[in-house]
Length: 312
Image 1 (spheres, helix red, strand yellow):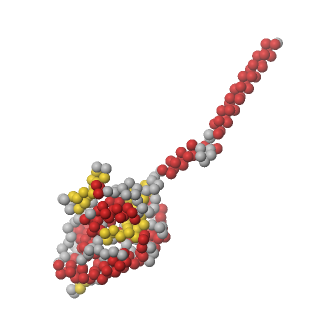
Image 2 (tube, one colour):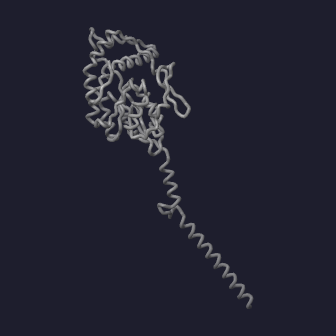
């Protein structure tokens, strides 16, 4: 009888000990459960950090708005050398094509590259500069956005514009008028020629300045960018509040192509064969008339941007 009582007491003691261990284990597990974690607990901080560092598509913080045939592709590729910059590879034409604009900002965002927090997304569509509806639409998206405008000699830009259209027409086996037939009418400059209108920089910039302050528009010298890219890229870095990461070693002159190519991490990249294409012919007399026509518009543009350029 005594042994039976002692055995029962021993079993109860063992059960109580085991129960205590189980309860302590449950309390320990509960204290680190994600459902009860504090904001500073390892599980949440790890998740938050992972979410913070995850790449995602973001709306652009800077846009290259033009000009067409001014060097926008070269500027975009050169900015993409910077480790804190990711660029949209294709021209999106969101703000100047109604079909695209009706799709909304979610569609626009989906055209952007994936970036990390702190990286700058850059888009370029040169058609934005001359489209009247674009400045207000860009402002509605982001009033603080930074705008880059790359310009070149307006007469050379016009000839380059014509040359691209001519090439496209010939590729499609379609006829196209000679440049002088489009440019001149009865011996005078044809002011209705669209390529000419795109070179009237002061008219288009005036619309942008009705919406954006001058300090949000950085003007890049396209002719200087071709001659010596680095100084123009350093100015662009400062405008975009980027740390200086692009250096002269990122560029080398390709004697075969006749312009600078890019070098990064041991890999070189040159713009495609359409860049540097020989211009369509224009007589000396027609070029002289064109330069005379641009003299006053150019002067007005110089006054607007507070600097001058060595144009014809």
